[in-house]
Image 1: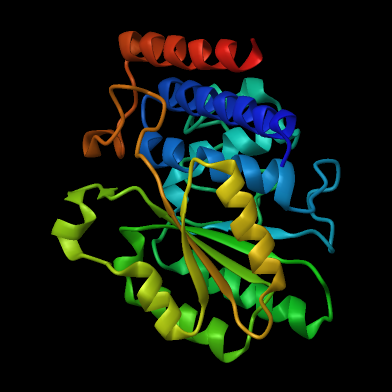
Image 2: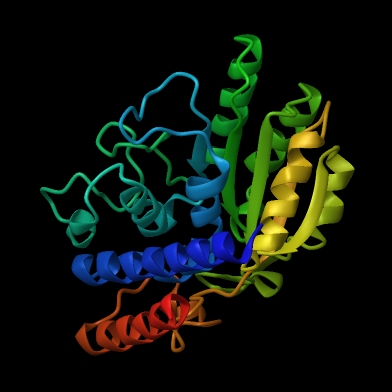
Length: 280
């Protein structure tokens, strides 16, 4: 990846983070913490990795993405909007009664959403089914799913992992956002999922750790996943919950809370400062 490409992705990620703040502030509700931690991965998927067409969201040969941790819809919406699936100006309508942007992704109302999600553990199961279906159809499209590290405490996640390995779904990439925090606190205190990579490897995945805020490492892991044959790939990315908003970083309280007007101004000013530096 060239420095120019990396800079462009970093700028886009910053705009997506701004969209997350705009959306949750507009809703006076939502989940900014885990949306911000995954913003770099959303950026890489929609602006570098996946073969999608905003002018034809239901294109049959597109790559698919399933947001298994569906509560981080503000991050997905901000990525889709910046990619051109719908207007960025609609983000502040999040969760409003008459808005198509509800609190969890709805494939029936939001262009670019491949699966309605929200019940934790279920998204990866649907994504595995999509990957299996594409295999049966002889299509080369790939399927990506993003889970939270708290979410993988759900038993259904591991049933889906067994299926993915059993059917040799090498068109399937499981991504775990390991920001270390869930709604009740630190994941290792609530119900430790560690060691995550070792468990996925034991199930039969090609699995590796990366820094989820490092685009070079994200790219290397994604490119490696394409070379893996006969088994699914898993990327466990270490991230910071609330990334790039100082008062939200590593704070479980921002799992599911919206910024008030003062907090909104501070968050946006911090992100605008980062964006100005990247554009300078």
